[in-house]
Amino acid sequence: EAQVTQNPRYLITVTGKKLTVTCSQNMNHEYMSWYRQDPGLGLRQIYYSMNVEVTDKGDVPEGYKVSRKEKRNFPLILESPSPNQTSLYFCASTETRTAPYEQYFGPGTRLTVT
Amino acid sequence: EDQVTQSPEALRLQEGESSSLNCSYTVSGLRGLFWYRQDPGKGPEFLFTLYSAGEEKEKERLKATLTKKESFLHITAPKPEDSATYLCAAATSGGYNKLIFGAGTRLAVHP
Image (cartoon, rainbow over all chains, first blue to last red; front, side, top):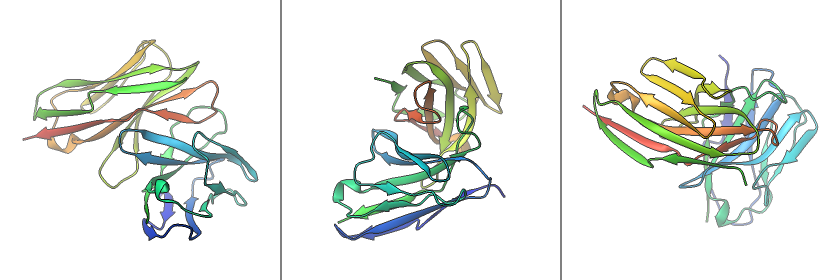
C-alpha cells in the first residue's frame, strides 16, 4: 500500500529537549516536504527536499532542521523546541520535482512543547 | 504576496441540502489548484487538481470548478459521511511543489 508514515504520532516534550520526527514514504517519490498546521492559519511549509541531499527552506523554517540522506526518509529535527512550536505536523511527498501533481500526506504528528 | 482564502469557515447542512464552498486565490502564476479533504486527526486526502480556468472535475457528490480568481467545491445532496474539513491549496510558478493552503471550511452534514 502506497503511504507516508510518521513517528511518533503524539509527543509531549519540554522546552529545549531535542527531538526528531521521522517521515518515510514507500512510493519512490523525489519531492518531500514538511508542513505545520495551526488553527486559522492553514498548513504552512517548513522545509522541502527535491531529492537526496537537496533541501531548502519553506515559509516558516526558523527553529527546524531537516536532512535527506535516503530517498524514502525525511526527518524533521527540532534542536531546541519552544512552546510556539506546539502544532500539528505533516510530512508530504509527490512524484516529481517540478510538476504540481497531488501530494500524499502522512497521518500527522501532534507535538506539545511545555 | 500569494494568498488563498476559503469561505465560509464553517458550514452546517442538512442531509440532501446542496451547497458550495469557495476558494479565492491571489497568486503569482497559478500552476494548479488542489482540493483536499481532512478528517479529524488525519492527514489531508487528495480530491482534485484543476490546472486551468474552465476546468471541472467530479467525484461522487463532489464537483470542483476553477475560474481565473476562484474555485468552487459543489456538494450535491450531501450525506453525513461528507462531514470533514475541506482544504484548498494553490501551487504557484515560484514555488516548485509548495502548496499555499487556505484555512479550510469545516463542513457538518446532519441527518
